[in-house]
Length: 277
Ligand SMILES: [Zn+2]
Image (tube, rainbow, N blue to C red):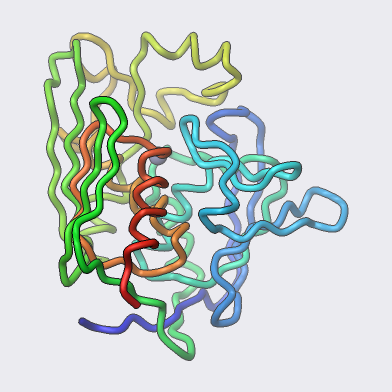
């Protein structure tokens, strides 16, 4: 197994846009951070700029996205976390001038571009690396996830799209940086058109549009997908971002079916309990 150096960025980089759930505009500034910092969000719009470190314990909501922090939350952090995980950036300060991260185009590609634009730099020391010594699984009704030992991170994701012509999608990927950037990062958030009204009534998806999400109806995609199996690829992206909250590089083969953020986090917690350092 190859130890991965700690990494940050060389200079600040800024992105702006609306949040997919709140629909409100926010600007973020990603700043370099010393080795050992982890990913730390700050609510730069609030007095005292409260900090929230991206950890499993900091998660306060998992409905259609990851919210960190209680009274001073930062919402929808998972796509930036996926981008950082995918390009191996372990230390970052993310100043958020608002309550929700910009959704941008709905994928992790704009965040990957931002981190690359800022320059990725190796730092002293290695990222904590964990391997499994036995299988771990979580089940919730028909959704489940299973992790088995492996010498690198591999994700196999099964996404049933019931009552649509898309059927069931399966994606299987060995997550090296190259494959992440080309095959996973550009996949966008997706949702069923018939759920949109209920989501909006629940205060979610207020900023969702064809410009930042792939809609699905009974006949299939409502706009042109970037990949034929874009929803399954985006599930891999979300899982990678959610695993970043375990604050380590995980080597395992994870097989998931019909899961979502809350099951991803339960999986991450179980894995951390069973991981070998
Ligand atoms: Zn997502």
